[in-house]
Length: 73
Image 1: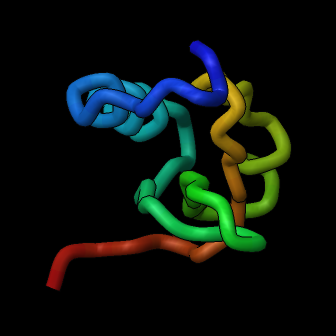
Image 2: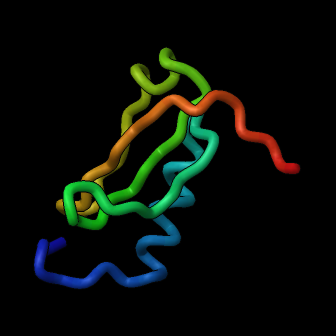
Image 3: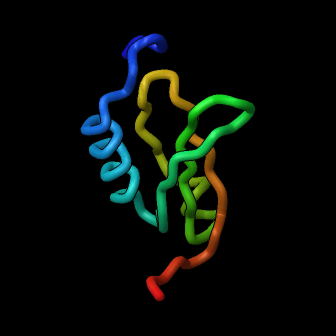
């Protein structure tokens, strides 16, 4: 995927679905990091974040953080 090509909403949706299937992922969000679009992946603990093998979406950065368990309210 070229860095100049727009990401199709259906591609982004499918990519986020793949991220949610990774062990320990609690949530996936869209964000801006240093002025550029990125995806933010929230993990339940440090170990699951460290052990995760993340797919790539062209040049879109993926920012990972430990959030703990996220449950619906």
